[in-house]
Image (tube, rainbow, N blue to C red; front, side, top):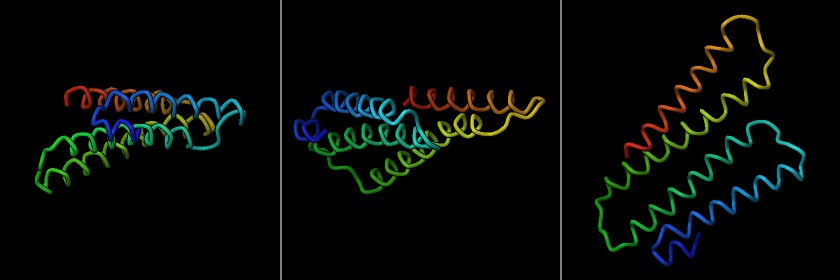
Length: 126
């Protein structure tokens, strides 16, 4: 990741994120599963690493942005990370809860899918 920032190229960070993700998956097998909301936090942190590397490369490219631009970008990034962690936590929380009879599980599942598609749509449009 540091090499990506120093070289002012984002491409190297993709490999760093892939290695971090592979390390996390390997740790899952060693520990025989997960406990709680750890996968949601790990996913949000991997997203944060990529976004922060991109931000650092953009800032180091000789651009001088107004402080308001950085505040807006930081606010968007924070909201994105909270949204991603919350959306990732929904299936984990639902999987750990007893399943009631009725339409509630279907409604929760549909809401999670709609939220995930909305998040992907927002990311693709930017």
